[in-house]
Image (cartoon, rainbow, N blue to C red; front, side, top):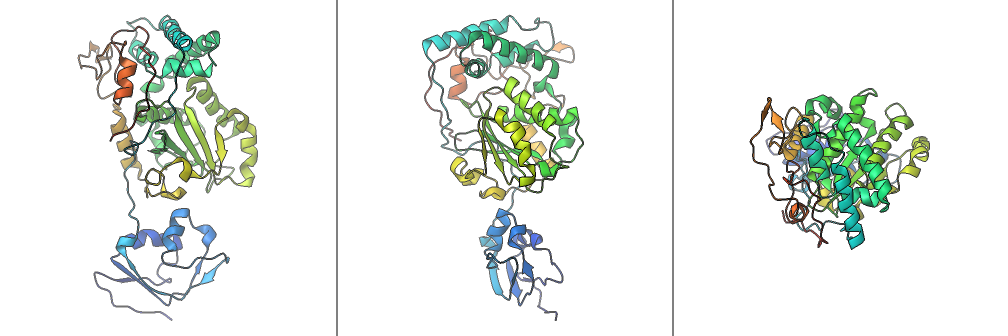
Length: 411
């Protein structure tokens, strides 16, 4: 028997025969000032709902542990009680976030860091080479020599070997110059997105293999590297690592990357983004794919399975799909534009504000770099205020290193 209701601007009646899809309800609720549900008889399958949907639906239906329940309810649900979806990408930590960990070094370690920088200088391309400013920019970043020194456990010979290998890899791969449009198609389903920060100020990269939209190709790898570079762009001063959350919801053997592809990714992370993976968190891993992590988990020390994400990430920074309060709704064009703008990436992969020494259209670009402080204070400046990736010290001597106090994000 069909029920009828009078429609007006403030009420809407939805009958299951008109909208049997439970998953559509949360979004429909947001468009209503008041919702009346009267004598509706249908089944809700709790296991089919996401965490965010369960929270919404629990305001409307009593969801219990039965495989399906018949409902006969009369409810009036104010719009104010419903969470509003947003397309806003979180590109900065919450105010008051204390960046961690803070690494402190002995005098002997500081000497090794400076010596490694001096060694890296000898490996640079000639100043006349178009990629020279980017190499110089990378070795002068406050975290480069410290990360490679720690990764080598302060074995100077090993640190030299590692830094040389990465300089050569970056020279060939040019990760800092990947044009956005080259990899944009890989982002259209939101299979890899940057959104939010953990409690220590690490940027979060969400990976959802179930949203795979392209065939295996070098472009997939370049897209991942592009995302790593953008996450590094967004790191607050003093932060050197990031978080990766891998969500296996809806993932199948077809959409899951092969072990060989995963190992290529791990090789890049371990060899060329050393000490950058702060946390690797895996959620919703089906038993069918457990073999996959048996093949790669020995290489991922910080990996954790089904962790309590609330311990690591504050609610306002955590996606609602994982129990957070950030009800992010992915829209490909909006997401892409926000990330490109926040990181200041130009269409050709360079920066909107040119770095020192970079040439444009065959002529020396005269744009003033964001930072013109000598390298004797570049690291210190970077920890006092957000250092931009477009900056590069004029002096190429080793960065000045001092022990730092914890950095608090003010805005």
